[in-house]
Length: 154
Image 1 (cartoon, helix red, strand yellow):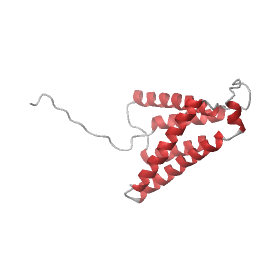
Image 2 (cartoon, one colour):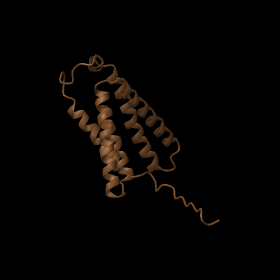
Image 3 (tube, helix red, strand yellow):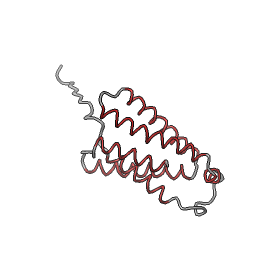
Image 4 (cartoon, one colour):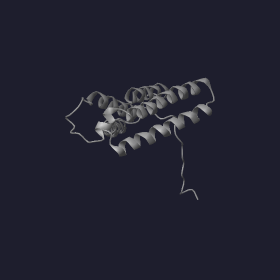
C-alpha cells in the first residue's frame, strides 16, 4: 500500500508540474540520485530497519501536514484538487506504514533474518526506485526566484 500510494503521489505531482526542463546532465543526475536514495530507503523500510523506517515516518508526516496546509491555503479549484489528491496519497501511505508496522512480516524482519529468506521484495523495491526516478524528473512547482546581485554598481 505504501509503495503504490507513493507512486500515485508522484504521478499527481508529475501531472501538475510536468517534466523538468533543466539540462540533460542535471536531469540525469536527479533521476539517478532519486532512484538510489528512494531505493535505499525502500529496502530499509521493507526490511524494517529502524532508521529508514523513522525517516519514512518523518517524511510521510511532513508530507501529510504540508498537503493539509496547502489545501487550507488553496486559491482555486485546481490547487485544491491537487492538494486533496496529494493529501489522500500521503495519508494512504502514512496509514499503510502504520498497518505494515503491525504485520508478522515486520516483526520477523526486526529479527534480521538473512535477505535470501522469505518472500522476494524485488517488486516493492522496483516501485520505490520508480518513485525516485519520477521525483528526479518532476519539474519545479514554480519558476523559482530571480535574484539580481550587483556588487560593482556602487
